[in-house]
Length: 378
Image (cartoon, rainbow, N blue to C red):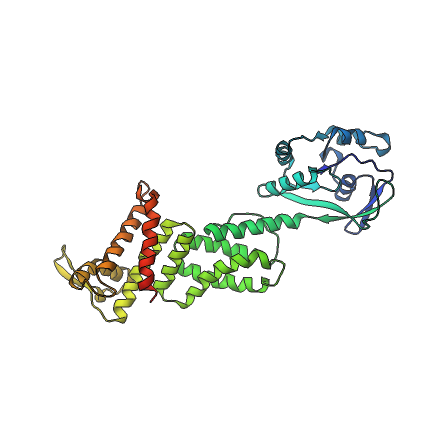
């Protein structure tokens, strides 16, 4: 284990009392008490401070071991340089001690610790809080209690996970130790895979489970953090009561809101075909088309498999709309708009296509949603 501490240059006349887990450690400096408490060898201690700090540590009464002096690092006047230096010092299984740092030193070490925690196993961050604010450690013996700041790392990671999911449905792999949230995090990773795999049906079912897990946390210490997440999960969970066409359609709108245009257009296209399937069956409208290969008339109602039936409906809609151009649902406007989103979908499926990077792509998709809002959601 490694200890990194920041230290100012305030001299102490007496050893102070530092407590951790019920044990008292009497030392001049908090970093020495922490090292004793965690049994960290002197050669694994790094102190960051000014030249005045180093001069202080060299004073005979403090009896600072040579190994610690040897690892002493002068802080830079540049906060950027200091941040990068702290970041480079943090390794796996490192403890940060912030108590007696001067000015910007503790905050810089704390922020670098937060930044490093996503990639390295930072063991803990400690701050020694005085039990008597009126006590002056430069003149008398004071008692301090070490408090852990590690939970704030988890809170930062928790908020990063939630923010990433709510923004893009992507769940980063960050360290979380909150027992209450771990099952939710596991389910969120699974939900992300379903959503980014265009598996809306399974995503909705999983959202219902996550909603159940979130409910007990609505009045907990995580209430503010999960508020936005609860809203995103509810958008999916509420679709469980909708027909397939609306599940796909509202799923497409969720993707569109997050600028995931390939997923949006794919689900929008499938939503419209599902709507055609549901509408023609409910209204008992028979659509058919002429298959030029077999020279047969294919009746879509005779197709038992949903995929084959909906593929049939896509082809048959053109003929029906030409014969019934003013039909309130299946007329020419529906047929033309379906052609547009089918073309957008086809372009999106090819890596070399330029249309999907065109600024008009999103506009075409937005116009399609405006059009289908009046039809699919009736």
